[in-house]
Length: 117
Length: 112
Image 1: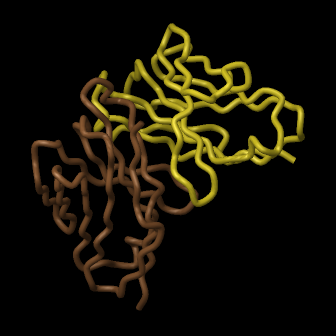
Image 2: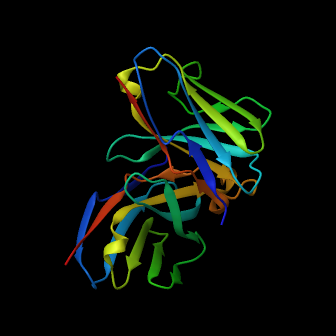
């Protein structure tokens, strides 16, 4: 099946620094990728939809200047958490859409756990 | 707005059937999904059902959909220790099939 990777799997950083998380589709091209955030024992909340070659679409309440998304190629999207603070600590999961508009072909990465001290 | 609700915990004895329930509010939901998340891992799509179906079976998994009551259930037959995980119910609609709304997840634990 289709594989999506994330890097790093775990990161610890100091408050005020920026952290970049990569999401790659390894064996397929993904025009659309999604970024989710999951708090402990809670559901996944969609943060933004990342479209290759265009600006990301952010969900209501998500600061686009705080969470910078770049979808530079059909296999790579990056999420940069700028000036991270402890409240940004969370589990960030990406997904990649293999077939345009079909959610059953949306594959999830293993997630990146961010801890901001 | 869309909302998907699930109970938070379920404990079953190994070998019994597990039934995880979910309710949703969006009447335009077209696709309904069950995902599995093991500790520290991403999500694995277990199965999905179109809204014009009322049942789907795939090996040990049976999905039942009551569209009138907006109720979805996942039955796992002969539950094994490897089934321990969080199970997420999710939905999307035809107009934005890639945008998935997730429930809060049900943590399934298996007791011997």
